[in-house]
Image (cartoon, rainbow, N blue to C red; front, side):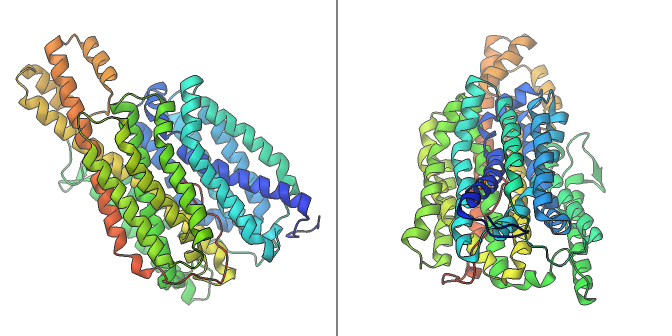
Length: 549
């Protein structure tokens, strides 16, 4: 085993190094997919609603998106190995806090904040550490195995979450993550640090502007179901008669524009910006990043909506929900592995278009199949299509983005790429949840208002209490609430029927928005190259919401 920073490893040491880095990649991907099947159970356990847990899921990917580029710069400043180990400690502390969380605020601190910050340090470091511990000719296999670890996590995540929630507790998943982190830290001593390069300057104003811009915009989308997209709901904050959502989103866009202006000025003065503005003028790179954004937007939206349909609308257990999602994992793995192997010279543009089309078709088929008499079987074909689309994109996009720049900029591109994927995941979850709750509320209140079986005082009370957003409830939860309120049989049945119809309307609306996003993505595929890039090997992508590559 070679010593020294950045020294390539001998065969025995290389295996342990690869296992350590792959375990980190596995953990980041697992945490984004494992709890989707347990949304209703976790929400009930910590005393919140589906919307509250949606906020926690969104906040986790949002924190990663806000700090990923800065995390990469910190790694270059203090050393990639040190950043990796510090990130693991923070991540482990977050997992332990989440496992013990008694309520939503503690869950947000553990899962969304601490784990998000830890991941922002870990993920950029993994790319550099693979390069620092393996020779050029061995890096393709090393990157491939680390990438495969993330794909396996996506495939196993729903089943792991389902088994833990059904037979033990969802908390054991996060307790198990603490054990895995301890194992990674024990093995990390064998990892050589990446070769030190030029000591970077961290653009603090740029980091603040970029994080604030992304945060405000996504917060606006997330709060839209409660505050209203444009017209403010009762008791919701507003300015000049317009919902605060609009001002948050505009504020986010303004701060992002200021960030880009500041980066341009730094580059013109010969100083080091947080992100090289020249990257944004690279047609191939921006094309790949755009596809990443739309892929994760649709992907995480689907991962939020489908488990809700299975677990809440149909009442399936977390385990059976995980089993029903398995077809997506199977086609995802098959496409990601077999397309490069069987079609090494295929046009990336053609594969990307096929992948986007498959995800769009899956969303449309599921949208068409949803009705009052539908069962769990209707998700199988759509998930097979969506999984194939995700795998097809995973097989090409990493290579497209990294090969668009010189090898010296691959780490910087990796940071931007991770930011874009997590931003897409945040917006996908927030948008799907917001549209679903908004439409569910409108549909439920309209049906209740028109029902002759429901007394006028109940209608008035429902309109007042649910104007900010109706909760996404199962029939059992709603029946228990109505029994506690002393509702008679006729009123209970009428409300249950209204809720069932409203749930389907909300789910259809969310899927319609995701399908529209997939259709929009097709217009940007022209930026993807028509021939396979050969200049470099793609680093593994990361852990956001269901890392599929």
